[in-house]
Structure formats: C-alpha cells, structure tokens
Image 1 (tube, rainbow, N blue to C red):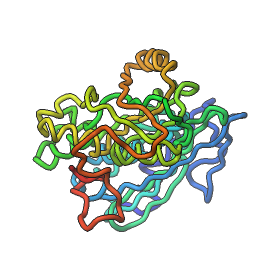
Image 2: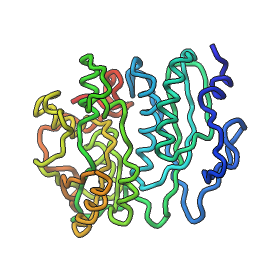
Image 3: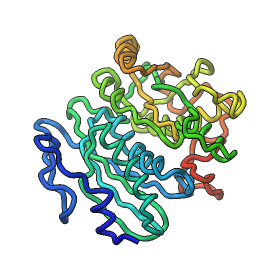
Image 4: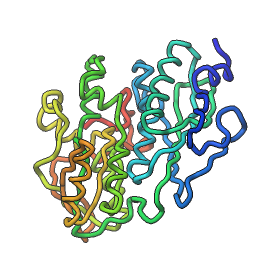
Length: 328
C-alpha cells in the first residue's frame, strides 16, 4: 500500500505547464500554496465535503466519485458567476488501492482540466471515505451574483432540467449501473453550470445552485433577499425520462425537493429574460421561468409538497445510500 506522500506524488501532483498563466506561485508539495489572483478581481471561495454513504454510494465508480466531489463544489462558483481558478482537496480513505486511486484522480483531474481549475494542495489521511474540496474562483466584485439581490416582481427561472439527480439515485437503488443512462449520469456525473453563471452576470439579480432541492434552495434565496415566491403549477422542465422512472407525481416531487440537480435558480427582471435566454442558448442551455417573486414572504402556488429538502442534522431518518437529499 502506498504511503500518504506516495499517493500525493503519484496521483495528485500535476507538473506545471511552461508558460501557463495559472496564477500559481507555489503549488503542491509545500506547507502552503501561494496564489496570485488577477488584478481587479475578487476571490470567491467555497468548500464541500462528500461522505461515502451520505453523498454518494460507497460502491459508485471511483471515476464518478472523483468527478462528483469537484463538480458539487464548482457548482457554488457557478452560482456566483465566478470563473474557477484553483482547488484544494482533503482525501480520507480506508485504504489506498492503486486502481481505485488511479480512476478517482482521473475523474477529479479530468474535470479540473476541462474547467480550468488547478489542484494546488490538500491532505490525505486514513478513515471513513470522505472528500473535502475547497474551490477558489475570481469574479468582478461589482457583478458577483449572491442570494441577496432579488426583488419583488422579478421572475424566477432555472437552467436546464429538474429532478434528474433524484431520478438517477432511484435508478441506482434499483440496480442500474450504466453511467451512460442520462438520469444516472445526472446523479453521479453532474456538470456545474459555470459558463451559464458567467453569462448571467449583469442580468440576474440573485442566484443559488440547486443542491438540497429546489424548494429548500429557493427558501434560502427568499430569506436572504427578504421576498416571497409564487411558483407556477405547470410548465416545469423535468429531466428526460424522469416520469418513466418515478411516475408523474414522483417526477414532480423530485423536481421540487429531490436535490442533487446542480442547476442554477436565478431571479431577474422581466425585461432581461430575452437577453438571458439568448446568452444561454448560445451555450446550449435552456432557461425556464417557474414563478415570480412577491413582497409577501413564503412560498406559494404548488400543492402536495412532501418536504423542502434534506438537512443533515434534522429529522430522525438517515438519507438514502448516496443521497444528499432524501427522496420524496
């Protein structure tokens, strides 16, 4: 079994590229990393921890676990409209198996490469499998999207489709293992909406990524902005195949509170809708209006809601295997 330092050197040390302007003054291998943000930009930082049996199935493919651990953190940068630059990873494993580590690092570093994110440090230790990822990005301080900028009369809209994460989890629990299945891919290989978040700068007034369920995350946005929401009862963009997997009612509940979608929920003035759709269409991303914001607080317009999303320290039950958000 390789030692801690052999694991770092073998799987997570990426040689610098000559002439690359990655802002890394000192990377993996020292007590700290030294970074140089771009002039005039503000640093956006977020951290997420993925725990086996809570956030992902322990027997999920290692490549998917590596990809997913980084993707869910990058999704927070997407919600702020930030451009990813660097990340740190803390990896806890029960054992250091070469084949597993090779595939895990392939998933993790592959997404790093595709998103322009440089791994600049971290830690490895022995214990229950968990991955902590800190991401750092840059954003114009005058344009950064937050949860607190929404106002009454603005529209609520979501990128892409909803319910795919919950649908993929349901399929995994039924024994589906083909990562080419669209719903399973949505759950285990989520794609953070980084380009969409940056395209919405100057148009959206507030944003949040949908990780804990649309209702739960909408509640966070409304609370921070001091507004309420009226959701439309029809016309929701459900993930393809979701109705076949969960039934009509189950599909709608998954869209409301299933979580793990990693789409963006945004608010914007009605006059900006056409331009926002135009910008996202150029990226191949749809934008669907699902409601509007109100002066009166609270969320209205949708009946038969089972719950508003999973919270780790609330309720008697445990989340399902691999589930961040309890199934409806």
